[in-house]
Image 1 (cartoon, rainbow, N blue to C red):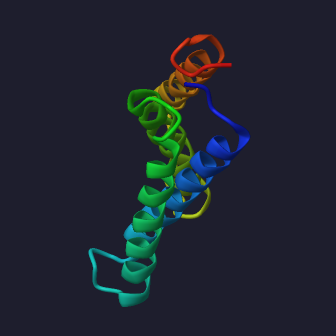
Image 2 (image 1 turned 30 degrees about the horizontal axis):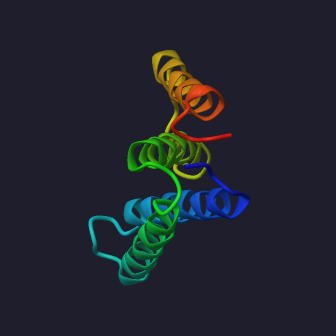
Length: 114
């Protein structure tokens, strides 16, 4: 059950699309703006498609932990830069712990395969 380069390329694509979709969700202003709603739907659907490809190789728990964890960190950065939503110290520490968890899973878990 190891991850190939293509698996991680699919996972990265799924993460980026999920972050774009979540950004579009915010920009849709509670589904009142059509273009962001369409972008959101397309990105979420395509993100789940790529995540399904990842699940051929990686265990669902590991894949989801990486997908959601890195998605949380990236959307938080988008929130800071794009939507001007500052993060306080506890939020930054928590996000750092999420990154640390993803690193531990990828470097040390036998579930991932190296």
